Length: 512
Picture 1 (cartoon, one colour):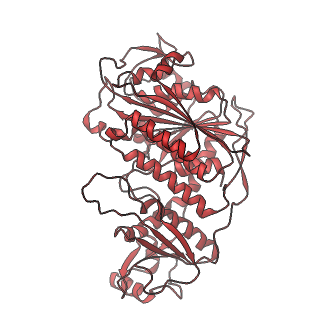
Picture 2 (tube, one colour):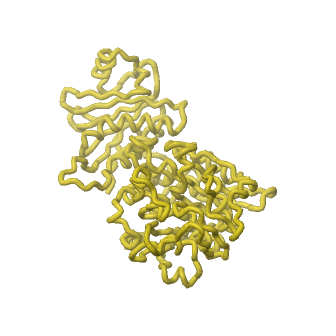
């Protein structure tokens, strides 16, 4: 349950708020009427810092009544990501005390106040709800109330409609345009709250320990979510997948006992939707590396290898709550990559669902295997767009670190739109090439394609080239989630597990 939001046109009284955040535009001089101005001036003088340095380092102090007040500045000339960081730093000065409620005062002109309100309220929602922990005594308590001061009225409804997608006559892939409303309910705070719910669902699932999120337990959670949200629910278990000929998925999942892996299909339909978008998520609940066993350093946190599926679920949940006018098909590849006598091996040759034969080179390249058959199922429905999310390659993390994720696709204009949207929402993507000559690294003498290259160079690109074999001619984006975990937080999110991709996915669906 997220904190309840109330709006007030009058500034808070001295005794009404125990934790207060004041956000103002970057300026060299503090504005008149600033709450607790004398206290702030005393803090600045004691620390010998200038007012505009609040944009880099917010400050906090206790007022006479004992309330904790934090002041931060927003530099509206900076990009969304930088503004998110400014707000997150200021919020954490308050949320670190686990308050029941916080007050937020936004100052500046109308546009500045609206922007600050969006950032601060969303930041309070995603950081005010603690993630699951397993301690006898947990000091983290959920934020229950947010009181917003400084807006004369609620934020405006949706800002019109935006075309999503491109058409390229020079490419084999033509991306149909999708015209979608920005906000299903017309309320920006309602939209932000749904996005926060999606982000939290993603992070809560991702941090669960592997003994609490086996494929069987994950499937049960998803089934419950489907009932709660009215999604159509379908499962392809190992028996069905073997019968269908989904050899790539089965090769990975057959090493587990019990064989509880499955591809789960969820559907959200809107009566006014004119397009269908497929969301595909890698859901490896634990990745040992298989016979090519990971060393302990790289096996740690491999319960988070299901993050791509959690991102897809988070987007689906938020879109449903927003009543977004688009049909969504969500395909989740849920399995584990274990080592056992039944596990697949190097030099095995398996046949994927679309008939492609694959030479196994490295058993730790299991993500592209389970995604291959899942993409094939998704593509058969001929959606207008397919987007897959996966913590797929170490080489993407090597290339970008944990502050960006990578994006590749089969249409250059679509990839560029993905990057542009990422700048607007603060979940930053970097585009990578996927030219045909990279295919040489996947040529096999004994099968249609190698699973990967032993050399390992540009594996993030080779993985995308591999996946491209299974999307047919459907417009497609592949998001390699190197930013799924970033120590000490990323953008507006303060936890190590970031939920990266949920906000971006919603922007891609709804425009900006």
